[in-house]
Structures are given as structure tokens and as C-alpha cells.
Image 1 (cartoon, one colour):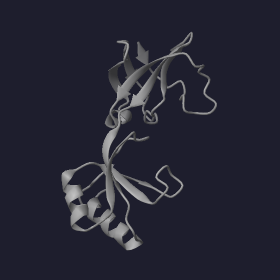
Image 2: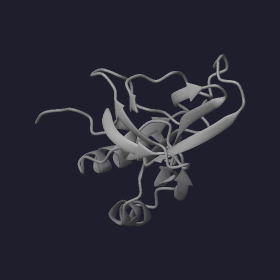
Image 3: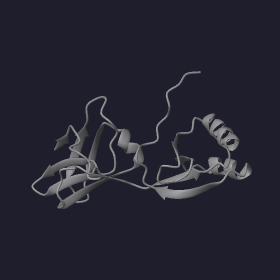
Length: 157
């Protein structure tokens, strides 16, 4: 079976998918950005995903296939991440600049997010952890399901 579009998301309030049997396709966060891939559900169903150019990234809860009370749904693996919580704007700028020079992929969240604080989240890297410890920047290492994949920002020098 080839999936060429996402039917909806079970986490959306208005999703049209009744509670029923759900198969999961578990993906690492990096695979959410892949438009073309072959996957297998937890029940052994093989699917090919071939989304058109310009399609949004896959998300946790996306429905790949649905029929008669059965749905195949994307489940995102938890990622090993560092949640960095600078104490001041100066510390935030210093940290972001220093880690940005490493071309580190990061995501930023504010007080209205699930983190309830201004934080920067990046994939775990022991050199980043060493940097944070050396400069006494507060952080925590966590296993989190990231809503969107980490990706490099496009730029030129």
C-alpha cells in the first residue's frame, strides 16, 4: 500500500476517526521530515509513504490509512534531548550563539509551551553537555517526543 496523503491527526479536536483498532508506525523524530520511506506497523502491515513535494512534516498522531474502524497512525519515538533553560537574556544569547557556531539543530519554546518557560531544546550531545556544565548554564537531559523534527536552518557564509 502506498500512502500519498495524510488523512488527519488523532490529536486534533475535530478528527473524524472514531475510537477503534489502531496500528502504530513508530518513527524516530528524524524520519518525520522524510517524504518517501517504507514503514511497517506494529501489526506487520507494510506501507510505502510517498508524499508530494511541499507536504508538511509528519506528526505524532497522523493517520496514514483508515477503513472500517481500523487506522494506521504515526507514533514518534522519544528523543534523548537537552532542555536548556538560561537564567537571563545574556546567558540565552551567549548559549545560543556558542551552540549556533556548531550548527546545532535546536528548537525554542516560550512560557506558553508545555515547558512553561523560555527554553532551547537540542538533541543530546556530550560536547554540548560539557559546554553547559563548564559555563554553568542550567539544563536537564530528558527523553521527549518532539512534535517536529530537528532540522538545519538554511544559511550561507
